[in-house]
Image 1 (cartoon, one colour):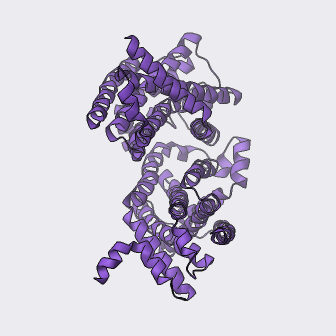
Image 2 (cartoon, helix red, strand yellow):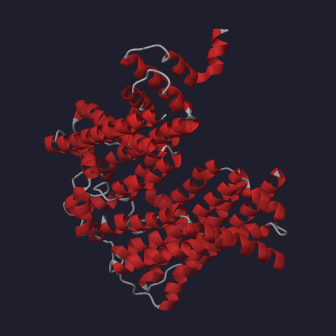
Image 3 (cartoon, chains in turn blue, cyan):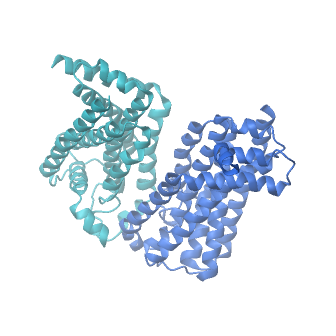
Length: 279
Length: 256
């Protein structure tokens, strides 16, 4: 009987019911996070396509651009090893969109309005909502790493470096999930979230994703790539794969990733407060 | 015939109008090829220094031809998205009820795809010329390259039209663009075919898109290669995809 009523209510109903009392902050995050993770895992298309697309590009570009390794000054590694960092970034960009769309759908469907009637705090709601994005980030980062290893790419920094790589890629994905959440909270529209995807992709195009910055011959492109934080996120991951332990690259990678998380989640938190106040 | 033409004209006009008045539609289809051009021609230009890279007009022209044909293909793909949207919104069903010759609907959407690409292809060409691209080909050769682009647009548009009409939902988007994307990217887009190695060389060697791309690059460079073969392949593609689109239309008619 209890199961049937639970089934009828659905996961969203469970969350509202769970939050009807005065739960602690961690319980609040847990309730919203469980729903976010369940919903994400149920939408297989959200898991498979964003994971597959970067792998297809990795397979094609990793071979098609192998000739680039013959450019004087190119690091003495295979192009596949050089470009392995890119799927992690592309995956993070997809996470920005999926996290934002999930949040926008909750706003559009009125689920947010119901949550506003519970004692749930804004930060708990935001952290919980991004739980699904974190799970996707973890799964796809592990898959990219395993595919890289399976295709013969070695991790120059060893097992410890692989773990740091996973940590950095998840931090980056969390930062981009914050971008998606911010747009969703500001606009309340899934269409607006989708519209930012090309813009995010452009930041990847105009970076050192395909070739080391010193080897970019066109001055304006090299300048843009130098000022583009995405270059440093990629170079942080790449350093672990092809160089080993490069303190400067890692400091810049983690620094920019942490800054992205702090800025986007800070702004998203403020947008969340406004949205909950409005409802 | 006049009923076919009037349906085709009406559908094409609506498609062109929607494209031109909706920034959300026209802007991405222009901006994306431009960024491909910037990222590939700008970011990877040192690849021209790789030993045995032999394309005299230079790397910008080498990449321009790819982006030009890619924009042609995606002009067709984006039209497939629009058809799927028309089915989702219910407009396509009303259109099929009112059209006296339904095959004109396919022709109309194909014309719409072509018009969309005229805009995108022109912008990409202007950008490449502004970036200092060399164009050694004579006017007839350049017209041949544009002809290849038109055929690519038609083939991709018919493919997208068929998928959209078979599935009749916007969720068909990934299925519309993925095969086009993969076929294009399995051609020698970054370096000439002889510089590819491993599995990608084997695949690119038998990929019809390679012949088409190399023919267009040859025409731009003023030294045509396999142009006739490229047109034969594209004509065959248009016939097959035309039948595919017609099958999609029949499926949509059966679905009511």
